[in-house]
Structures are given as structure tokens and as C-alpha cells.
Length: 333
Image (tube, rainbow, N blue to C red; front, side, top):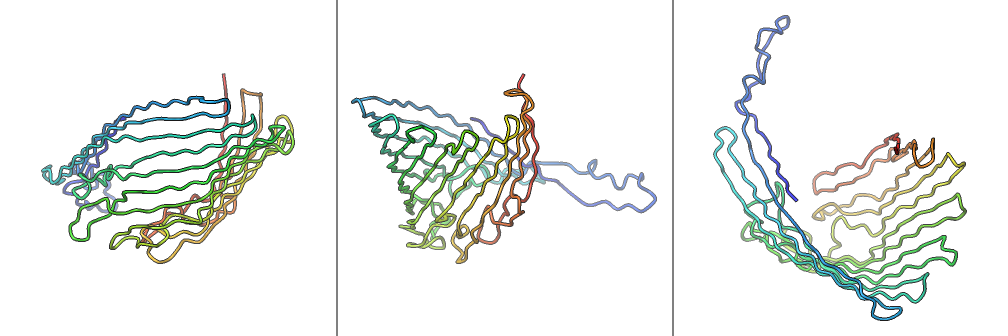
């Protein structure tokens, strides 16, 4: 993986004057008199390798084990645009190992149960967030425990997946209140249930759904000026999910619709208020011109043009996608 970005900065930008009736006098030509420079750039190179194996140890029991190694180097440079002089240079080097283990119990062809453990990490800075405060800070580390099941109906028309999970961020990045350096001093956890189902009520009528309930979420160790100990973490709704259904009216025509919902949640850094819960609706219509070769599909996203907060920050929010109509065609040769 390789990524490189840079932002040019305009130099000596002075808007020119021109008068009505003389558009060709040269005064309104801006680009010819504006040199450009680079304000900053970011370059990263990353690679990863993993090994995983599933071993059957008994007729109904299997063991899973895996390891993944990731390595990334990143450089961020800042310049004075007018002179090109470098004003800051930050380097980050990450080499981390992630682990995965699990046990699978399959008593019948219709049921299976599993317990899984895994670790993950995320870097302390990337792109334009990399700087003096976090360049030397190790990655945050998380672990996840999951107890789950998959149950199929006897006729195999329905499949349900259920899991009880506990996710813990063991080393959360916070800013030291005495010196402006990011340190791994925080901890938080969340416990909840995930439910997914899919199947056919009739040969023509399909249903799909997913639901997440996170009743327990807590900041175990907070930081000054951030989310406090004992609070519910920001951007963590108690309820969220989606439900979809489609119906094949004729061999050529299929229609469908669905609902997406999310309960209220506090913006980033828990400013003391919350974004309200919301529900959006989508519609689908599909026409098969030639089976497996030519299909025309129309989607209406957020049918009611519901206004809701998608990305939530302390002082502002980014609204979610408004009503949008998409028409697409799939052609296979």
C-alpha cells in the first residue's frame, strides 16, 4: 500500500481589477501572475502479511488460529508556501502483530456455535493528523470477544446469526494535560448484541435485516478535557439497524424497500448534548431485460429527504445523504 498527497498553496494572491467593457485588457487574467507552492505533503508505505488455519479436532469441533503482521512508514512535511522552506517534518514507523483465535462447535448441519478472540490496532496519526504530538505515540490497541451462533431453518429458507460481544480499547490515545503530546492513557469498553437474518417468506418474497443493541458502553479511564470516566462514549448509539424486503412481481420485475434507523448519540468528545434518533427509508425497482445479461435498476435513497446528523463533531455536524435517485444498468457480455 502506498499513499502520497500534497496540497498546493497560492502565492502572492491579489485579486486583479478590471472594468466593464474591457474584458480583454489582461487585468482579469489571474493564473498567469500567480505562482504556486506546496504547503504540505504526506507519504506512506504499508504492507501486511497473515497466516490462518482452521483445524478439525473432533467430529463436531474445530479450532481457528491466526496471526497478522502490519508494517507502515509515513512522513509528513510542512512548508512555508511563499519561500518553500520546510517548517516541520514528522516520521512515523509502525510494526504491529494482531492475533486471532476461536473454537467452533457444529452439532448439526443447521446449527453452529463459536467463541472468538481477536486483537486489532489503529495508528496514532495519519495523513494531516500526523504531527509532533503523535508521531512517536504507539498505536492504540483493542481486543474483541465474541460468543455467537448461526441457526438455519429446517427447510434452509431462513438463516439467523446472533452474537454477544465485548469490545475493549485497552490503550486509548489522549493528550497529556501538562505537555501537548499524545499518550496511551485511556480505556473504554462496549458490550452488546448483533443480530442478522435473511431468508424467503415465499419463493418470490425475500427479507433481510440486521440489528445492534449496545446497552453497556463506558469510559473506564478518561482524560482531562476529553470524555470523562463513567460516561457513555460518544458516537455510540444504543440501537441501530436496517431491515429490507424485496418481491419478485414477475420474472422481469423486482421491487423492494427498507428502513435504516439509529438511536440518539452524543457528538465527538461528549459536549453535553445529543443528536436525535432517526429513521430513513429507501426504495428499489429492478427490471431484467435479458436474464443474467442486462438489468436496469432504480434506487431512491432517503425517500422522505429526512434531515439527520451523519458525522457528528463538538461544534458542527455533517448532514446525512438527502433524497437521491440513482438509475444504473448492468450489462454482461
